[in-house]
Image 1 (cartoon, rainbow, N blue to C red):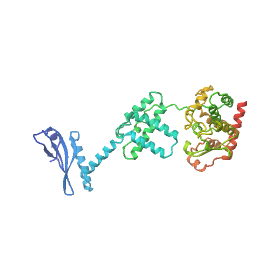
Image 2 (cartoon, one colour):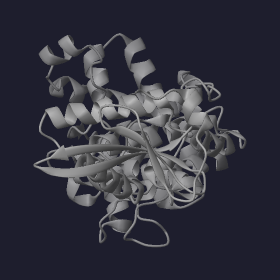
Image 3 (cartoon, rainbow, N blue to C red):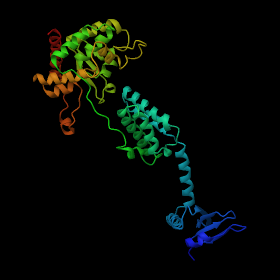
Image 4 (tube, rainbow, N blue to C red):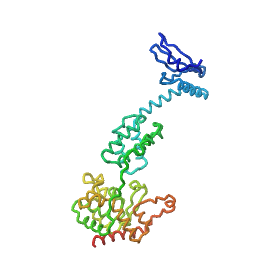
Length: 395
């Protein structure tokens, strides 16, 4: 006769364990200590076996019957529910032994193999280092949204809203990698969307007025710091590439005879090789620089070690020394100066200007049909820009 909840609540312990049956193999064992344990008896391959479901009332009568029915479905399909349960336990133990830090390390290794830029890898390792400090030693299956949010809130408390946003993104990437590897079930950062303070996006400061830009060029001429830093600022203004691309430039990338600087894909933001035409003013600066650093690898080596490029703060710090605040001009701002003034001149195809900046067409269809470099026009554009800066400097 099927059991009822009233019967189960009234079961009393005895001196020895005893069983009370439900139906279809489900029964309850009552122990002398008063524990009431759900079990199921079944046969497979001629052998009688037992499957445990847990204790009552944590496992209710309805839930116990549901578990029994699931086990009977496995039996009907020719599977042993006991063996499947043990396999799940083993897999769960293995997953619980895999920490967030171990998956973060595997994620970083994968990014290295994919050829991500070193600057990107440095930022990724720095961000995930904060996550590892907070919960890296925990099994990845035990990391919860509140744990992650607590880590992010500590970053936010310092006013670093954009860093917190990027950190959430990287933590999510690690979880999605773990899900793909079968060691995590979900990405808990999805539940945190909208929980962080949205950073105020402000464009990098740049001088867009020709007269003011001429004043900046004269101020760079008068810079009294390291000669290599002064040359770096001049080349940044002339060649308008990203500061990191210039800082990491190596001498073997420059063909002064052909007047071309070839930047490899690994250093480009969009992972595409990029050629930069060199005007005569840039060639003159490179000749001066070669006398100073030409025996090494980098055009702009660190003062501490020639095995590393100059710090990412060097060029911005030089702009501060000559009197330009971070609200007035940044090293990255030379690109905006070039783009604005070149387009406003009306002399150049906007696509040539964009290709000079190594920008990729946002429209996928247009990008598929617009693959040219506009090289000849860009050579003329580079010479024009260098001459224009000389005019502004002299005006």
